Amino acid sequence: MKKFILLFSIIVISVSIFASNPVSNFTNNPVLQNANISLLVTYLKTGKTLYEIRPKNATVTASTIKVITTSTALEVYGPDFRFVTRLEIDGEIGKDSTLNGNLYVRGGGDPTLGSDKMGDKDFLSKWVSAVKKRGIKNINGKIIADPVIFEQQVINPKWSWEDMGNYYAPAIHGISYLDNTFKLYFRSAKAGTITEMLRTEPEISGLKIDNFVKSANINFDNAYFYGAPFSYNRSVTGEIPANKTEFVVRGDIPEPALLLAQHFRKKLIESGVYIGDAAVVQTNEACKKFVIYSHFSPPLSEIITEINVKSNNHYAEYLFKYLGTKNNKTGTTDAAIEHIRSFWKSKGLSVDQLFQSDGSGLSTTNAASANFFVELLTYMQLKSKYADIFYKSLPVSGESGTIKDLLKNTALQGKLRAKSGTIARVKCYVGYVETKSTTLVLAILVNNANGSSSAVTQKIEEFLLDITK
Image 1 (cartoon, rainbow, N blue to C red):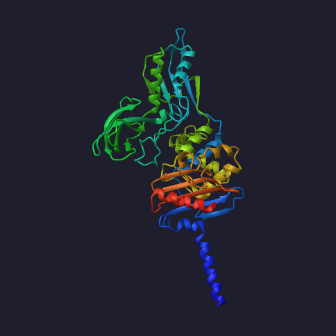
Image 2: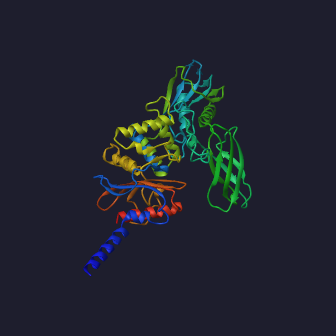
Image 3: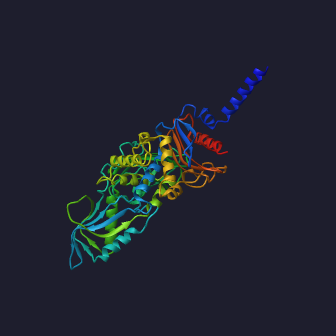
């Protein structure tokens, strides 16, 4: 009888422990039981592991890769770094106030020129003033946009055809302008009918768009652009809400450097500066140039906050490409990848668990382990000079950015600082959670779950609430 009671007690205790194990609760459900998961939760101060599931397995990251891009840029350049775009001339200014030469816009990799997100919206007026202050009233030459700082491979080769040409995946040119996106205005009628294109903003000379977008009984933008880099021939397909007088979708500008040069030229002419030749894009390192004005972006601290809070792909890719210029004359994808890997390897991180293809997470070939993310996040809090800036660049659960709905109205609202990552069959979170007594570092990467994105999010929320009781 005593043996039976002892055996029964052991069984009860074992069942109880199993039932209360957060990892078991997380994985043993129909949504996640077949998913590829890499998970690690540690104590920040001690590094002791609290929970883990295949922590060293490289897993598709989606936008959580942005914390690698932003933290590297912050460590390499510092929070006060600003991108510089320069106005240059290659000729003499005569006594008659004529510039006998060209006026250049030398790109510096700044993603904020004309951006909706931040920066000086009226910067072109300041550029015009700078030209006039030099005593230039006529330009006997061209307005030349020079995007040589980045490679001509403006689309990451690992991006999908579906993404290219759309506002969330604009091409990465050495000169960015207007977030490299234009707005296309539609009028829609009853569901099932083809929509009418009204106009683009800004107007882009030579742009031809074939429209296959239908009206539908939906309340969101489900239209997609298709088109090759630099091409002025685009098609747009998909659906937009029915019966709208105006509805806006966004696509990428074929040549943002040229559009900027054209707008700059127009602004100069309107101000009374005569220019005979048209605006062009070209690279010309051979001739000697003189800088007449330098335009500075907002500080890096603000840019990385925009990237992490709003998951801004465009800004992230510009930081990524610019990192490629650190040890290379031109910013390339390969140079950026090499610099990021070598930097974190020098800090002792497990870069053999990192496979990075871009800076934003659009590519499904990006992969990293939960362990790598936890190592990086731990470094950024315990060893970085910019720990507080990085921490505050992350959105807050239930309150801001891409996790404003996560854990809302729960005990963890306002307690989690994390970057989310979501693409098809991928849901990830990496960051820090504050408990009553300590700070936890976490990375939860879930691929190929048997459920919707919202169902996976719910299970992650349950796990986080479970481990912080």
